[in-house]
Amino acid sequence: MTERISLTRYLVEQQRDHGRIPPQLRLLLEVVARACKRIALAVNKGELGDVMGTASTENVQGEVQKKLDIIANETLIEANEWGGHLAAMASEEMEGIYVVPNRYPQGEYLLLFDPLDGSSNIDVNVSIGTIFSVLKKPEDHPGVQVGDFLQPGSAQVAAGYCIYGPQTTLVLTVGDGVAMFTLDREQGSFVLTRENIRIPEDTKEFAINMSNMRHWDAPVRRYIDECLAGEEGPRGKNFNMRWIASMVADVHRILMRGGIFMYPWDKREPNKPGKLRLMYEANPMGWLVEQAGGAATNGKERILEVQPTQLHQRVSVILGSKNEVERVTSYHGGI
Ligand code: AHM
Ligand code: MG
Image 1 (spheres, helix red, strand yellow):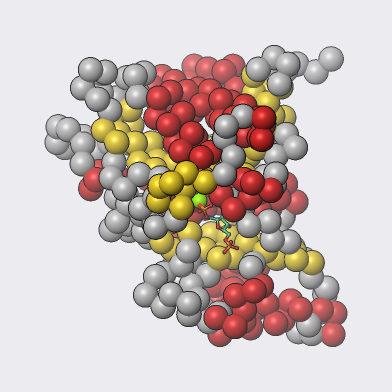
Image 2: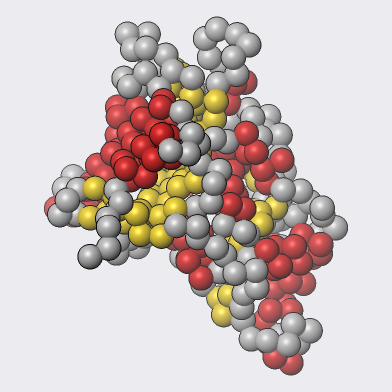
């Protein structure tokens, strides 16, 4: 029988044998994984628990919150606030930052998350997930403030997501490639199921919400038109399309078999740079994709190099198989 390596053992070995992660970061990742297991349980209950449907509240983006959005947010906060590894947290579901209460010790890390991404899929039993990003708190001042979070994605020290699908799967990077852990429901532990995940450089599969086509900018239109032209077109090959409307599920497919994912700026909201959020959606996903040999840009520059100015900042996202991302980026005149 092949040896089973749990997430706990993987993290201990990353710390002890490879010196890649300090003890506080190891603890943080363990705690995030534990919170994801709890969220998975709530998601799995579905209509059998009081978890479905909308709450009567809106989040900072003016979106109606689903009950599970709130449950997932609270689960992540409660799991993480007392361990002494964090200074503060930020979430898609909270307007300001959540500073660790002073009854608990203050740690040196900052955790950002989208507690339940793909909210429109919650009530229809389609894959959703938790996305997270970890930063180090700047050491030049005591206390913690919003500005401490405004670091580019290249400063992340860990990032990942947990997808609640047919399997519950945690995908993680600490800057040394991408590893995947599948939840063994009988044992209640995440087990290493893939290491050194690589995204093929070429692909014949794209993911974009085609219903927004009339709002797109010329470079995106050109790229998709060329894909749709198939074998007779300039690309000389047929393309397939997938759109799950859960970024976690679309990115997971790309990590498993390649593809390109786009949620570009469009004319519906000309003053917003895109729909997806930079700090807790695009940055962690962008880093995972880069760590797997893919690329992630906003059409002009690497997503990881965008300097954030706001916690809930949005960004145009093009990520996945390297050669395709480079092609779309070049159509935008970027990099
Ligand atoms: P959410 O964080 O409110 O769930 O929104 C983000 C999601 C992404 O997971 C997904 O890629 C996108 O929104 C889908 O948007 P659309 O419904 O416009 O296709
Ligand atoms: Mg989201």
